[in-house]
Image 1 (cartoon, rainbow, N blue to C red):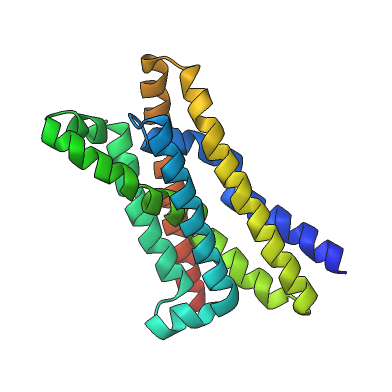
Image 2 (tube, helix red, strand yellow):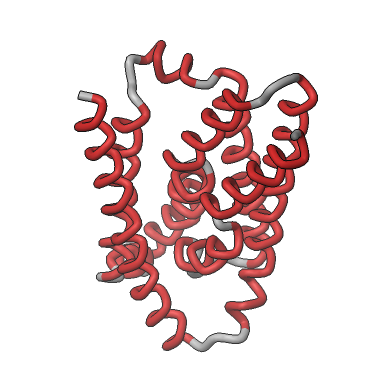
Length: 210
């Protein structure tokens, strides 16, 4: 029974977080960063994302309950914030803003570190769907052994995200500037669709609960 639970947990979280699919997203939001900076961002993003998932693993619905926030409301908010990033990616406002002056170049480095928190850690790694999945899976754990197994599954998924981020830098070397621009805009469109899906799921859940 426990092996089935762990296989189900791994499949659920792997599909929900999609570590492989995060690689191009990582490239897009860290455009212009050095390899060393990207490594620091990858470490920070996975540590923060993993920490958030473990927080909800052990605290569960209590965290949102104390704050008076429902999971659907969290999902809608995350979708709206992600939509803003997507729009900037599509219209290249981020790149234009970063390259205007030397002073903004410094600000750009600060912003690059900020992307480790948003949108990488939240909501791409520890998004509403992943948090909801962790809360659901923790409630399904039959005993301490199952819960410990779930901890191991989350560690494997977070490790996969980190590896995916590290390999993303090699992928960029194989692409030219034109390809990078095209991919960034395409991913912006996909990210916009993902954000709308977050919002739609949240609204649907709120209507069903109401």
